[in-house]
Image (cartoon, rainbow, N blue to C red; front, side, top):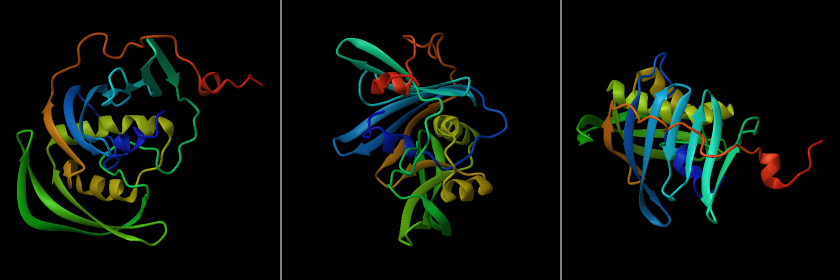
Length: 221
């Protein structure tokens, strides 16, 4: 997977999946070194979700709990299964794009400001946290307890969950409060959100999947 795409997916590592997940569609806007980009996520249930990334023809897919990446390169479509790939710090998906994972959450303070995004009202908070090296950080986030926001966040978490990635401390803190993320600073925001089910074929693999060993050209042992 392209390392440029990893921070985009790490943006929504805030909330764990609820017990039941209905289908839906969301459009997200993210800030990258190359400017503002849009991405779309569609989901069917907790084990089936697709994230269309800014690069045309590139998306991540979780199908029955197995993670895949799909890329269009030199006129060919390449599907890679990431089953068994060991997750590591910095590989993730959602409203937390920093290279550091939160070891602890120190405070969640309401600023008193309110904001509506994608037609959903949210409250602004300052989220103070500490990373593994002891560094202090403060995220300014707009949060909501809207069920559809929670479902979208849970769908975004399908990919790191499929990789076995442990939850960030910020994810735990917001999960305990039943909150999802509408916006994180200038880095991430939801621009459209609906309970519309994805069209047929959305989760079909466009080509036979390869393993990471195949991609690296290593002989099987």
